Length: 243
Ligand code: ADP
Ligand code: MG
Image (cartoon, rainbow, N blue to C red; front, side):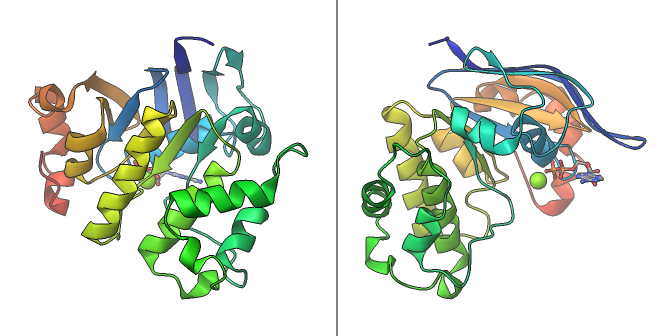
């Protein structure tokens, strides 16, 4: 067990001439809830994709739980203990909620039925286990997405806008689940526009701007930072995101 569960060094992702992630160095201590904020297009989702093997890095490295996983395939990284959700949820719509969980490719030794039951009851969606995923609200689909990630019992979970489009009651439930899982030892990295989320559940905030990791610290400190205010002026400020 290493103290730092996730460590990127100079992680870079280019798309042609565009540098979407520009030498991002970031360390997440085990057990932390890390937030990532930044204007639209600042490279947050790209960072998740590069970290979890969906994009091949153009440079730099990713060390997860003491192992260099740079360039590994997504399923291998997931099995190593880094789970993630997507900004755009994509459940198997013609399957039930439970079938969506059982469809996760878990190692042979995992009793998938038992695990699925535990997760459905933990997330309080056991009463809709046999409903088709297609009928679920956007917020319930976010919960289902989290449920699927939990099937692999990850040590660290990356969440891309987990409360976007979710009603306040369900948002609170999702945040409670995150806190409970965190108390049980799961590390989180959360990309989120909602400043309430940053204020209430996140330990440390990392700020991205134009592909770079510009500032890191407790939310109250970060929001006073001059560079952060500059990054938000004119971009996120126009979208109604206020610090
Ligand atoms: P964020 O999640 O912070 O809003 P993204 O990581 O989605 O930002 O995007 C960062 C930049 O990279 C944007 O300019 C976006 O257009 C670009 N980008 C993201 N993914 C791709 C891709 N697959 N191909 C080309 N450009 C991309
Ligand atoms: Mg994004």
